[in-house]
Image (tube, rainbow, N blue to C red; front, side, top):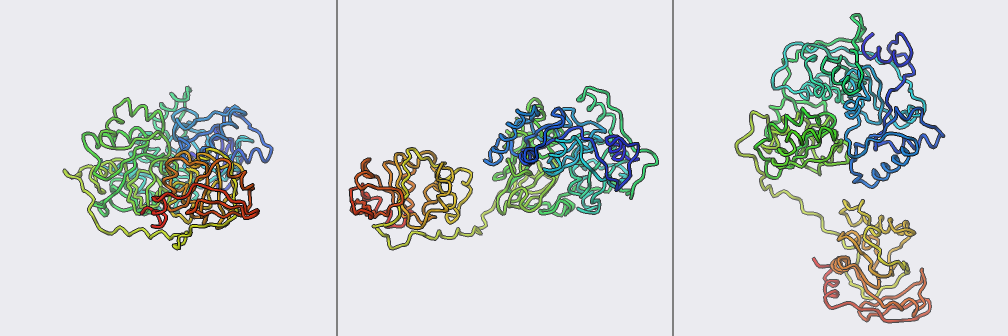
Amino acid sequence: MNIIEKILASKSNKTQVKPDEIIDVFIDIRAARDFGGANVVKNLMTNGLTIADSTKTVFTFDCNPGGSDQQYAANQHFCRRYARENDIKIYDVDSGIGTHIAIDNGFAWPGSTFVSTDSHANIMGAIGSFGQGMGDQDIAAAWAKGSVWFKVPYSVKINLLGKRPKNISAKDIALNLLSIFGANKLLGYSVEIYGDEAEKLTLDERITISSMATEMGAIIILFSPSPEVLKYCSEKTGKKIEALNADKDAQYIESFDIDISKFVSMVAKPGHPEDDTNIANVKGTKIDSAFIGSCTNGRIDDLRIAADILKNNKVAPGVVLKVVPSTDKIWQQAMNEGLIKIFKEAGALVSNAGCAGCAAGQVGQNGPEEVTLSTGNRNFSGKQGKGYVYLASPAIVAASAIAGFITTPDEIPSKPAEFQKKGNMNPVAKTEKIISDDKKTVFEGKVWLIQHDNIDTDMIFHNRYLAITDIKLMGQYTFDNLKGYEDFAKKAQAGDIVITAKNFGAGSSRQQAVDCFISLEIPCILAESYGAIYERNAINAALPILTYKPKMIEEIELKDGDKIRVDILEGKITNLKNNKTTSIDKFTDVQLAIYKNGGLL
């Protein structure tokens, strides 16, 4: 048998397994991330399932280490509560990437089995362990049963012949293999890599190559553990680990001999990790940002390589370099070795450990038309933002960050490239005014009587929507964080008028908390008082806001849903249900001038 067959046989109580055979595989460690973890728990709870063995079950929060996204924060806390009730270990937001933690903390070892909601769980191939990324239902089943069904894959053998060139990194090896096999020639296969140069690969280098098995379509890329890897895993597990090797007569569906001496420094072009080219073909490409990290290149060796290039250098003007170690232990080691100091002095942003931009939950994302050079494993369109992402090694990314364009460490210019004015910024389309230009000064409409003090801007327009810049899209989120009024935007009609109490719009300076009412065609708002910034924002946006005395509601016997008339020049309000009228504070001269102008600008 080959390596994967030996592992699967040992974990399914069989003496031998063959390709295409479906077996029930015992899983040594069953992990769920903050991405997918909440769904794993919901699957368990919905189906009345319990945890088979909490000592073999873990959460790893690596996609959004910091809960900076509201939904991630909610999912993380939901998982924390479940973990407390079921004695499940959590490697929380301060820990780093779950697959790396599994290797470095000794709960994955050569010959072991590991599953996670992480599609790159096959990183375990770096230590001769079987790892698989699986969906929420699979992981829930593994948590409840301790095992999962699996079809034994066919295996492919790759022999790396010749001597590895000095400038060829592990990332270059992965990209060269991707250029040879593409995204589907190894689809569904288990891959074993051999050769003199393969045996010399460090643990960190093996992790880089194994992490890109997913991009090649492979089930896993396995390495027979070297003495260095066996020693490392023995230290982390606290037990002697034996090497797991393929038999001499092991069967492979195909074998490839590849000359590593012909490998070149490669860059993957935006959109496809397998669309690789010799770096010579993209040298000089101007970049806006650079990223060093991810499960592929966030190890200490990667950070040392980058720091060695960045030392006594500066990131090019206007270029943003983001560095994210893969685990907190590596972060601490980088700090102790002075690497963090080098990154900061070079002008890089250093974040806490985690997946970063690759998971869309932390630093590393880019904006439309932004050109990023990244050490990540994926550059699918939209994966790391809305810009263009090239993939390369840490050395190339660090050198390019200094140069301001894609280059190699031996061709960093003495003077970095600077951005040139191109004069091609398309003007932003003029905002269509939803309030008509006839500048009405009398409004009639149904009243929403919301008698709550201190309604803050998060209640009006929550910060999870702050990236929205199109006023037409803002209205749908109005009051969705105000208890009892979450459906306001669905029920409110154009022309409705809002009357609230003291200190309306307290809190942040966000303009959206004003513009959302303009979006809904709410013509005016009345309150006893306003937050100072909110009042300015409303006046400047030409949204009529007025103040009233505390007894106004009683004086005109106003009830929720009544139709009212508001005269902003005369300073009067009338309840059209009973024709009772009272005074309110009218527009100031400045407010009126801004209103007639259609806004401050």
